[in-house]
Image 1 (cartoon, helix red, strand yellow):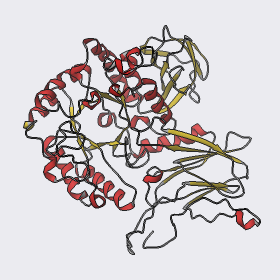
Image 2 (cartoon, one colour; image 1 turned 30 degrees about the horizontal axis):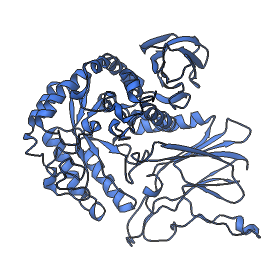
Image 3 (cartoon, rainbow, N blue to C red; image 1 turned 90 degrees about the vertical axis):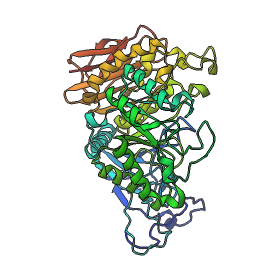
Image 4 (tube, one colour; image 1 turned 90 degrees about the horizontal axis):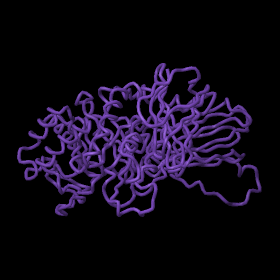
Length: 543
């Protein structure tokens, strides 16, 4: 769309006046996509997502609705429509936009339905700057006109994402360590500490070591020193390497990392003043970090969008930096606070930094992390999501002594297994781990030998929703192999049954890779596993 107009005004969907004329049942909200129903009787499921994960742990929400003669309006990123009385006529729309209020010119809703079909609203056109010649593109949509099931429709979306943002194991596989999870903030970030950390990280099997907030000259408001309190606006000089903490720049740290086969990453917070007016300067800073220091992964934090100019400038900053680096520069997009890109916007620049959890605050529970990645796996490629695991030996006193779900009660290899379908994030200091922690390196090495093949597949959640007392899991269909990663949480029942439909495993040979569980029965679409004790898992594949 070009120029200034009022075709898509920001309006309210509220309407509760009495209806005495049929005209009041007509809808007049502008839309930019319409999918017709073959009959008036469809059920719809609207799926919404939440970012700012610092504040909550329920990331995915789903509501089931029936259309009415008068349009009904909904907020969400995905709409699935299924013909009533049948399960083989499914429509899908995925709105590839920031989440709700983070969108530009958000009308307050994303979808509507009536007896004729469903519509998509709020395309993001923003004419508040009064530009009569500017061209704007609506938020993209992915749609499926017909699928035989919800699973098939959602699999098509995942396949599309993995085709457009192709998953390349040698390029995309990460096992990242970030020390911020031990809550020392930047108080230990310096050359000698990082040099010691790299050796311990390599022993664990870490491939990417990310130095978070504190490597830079200008310290942020989150610094343990509480000096500059920077956050929204930075000078170019703030992004020089901190000369006190790193007297040799990053030279010695980079040399040590290279010698251990570890890729070095950093943290960056672009300046937000005047709606990212300094985006070109910040693009150049990102490129300089890549060219001068060989940095290939940078965590992008502090983003705050909500208008078209801000989101377009952030997008250009990242896309141009990536293109000019020859696509060697990738980004961890933090969605833990603020109005950011969510799971459908800015998501193709690298991977998504999902959550901050800390044993210091007693808000890290392994089953909640498992629940989040399990919930997301139904709708998005979780290969692109960083999943954290923490040092479970810290801060036992922050949890109730009789709490069976506290991290200290969960085996360390189980904590790592939770992350194995995504991009694991060791949210801890390697030098703070006890010697027994490094026993998990055997599982890590085995996982590293298989992950490239496993994560090329379409990953789905199976079993029960994690709640600390259930049997959840994942399945990945990759070529002729069907990988399964199955869990027993803190339930007293020793046997779990998992439906892996539509994958067919009957008659196939099972190869166990790791875990205490044992497969005891298989039929066409289900597998039964026996576990000797709670908090057990099994990982392997059928072929």
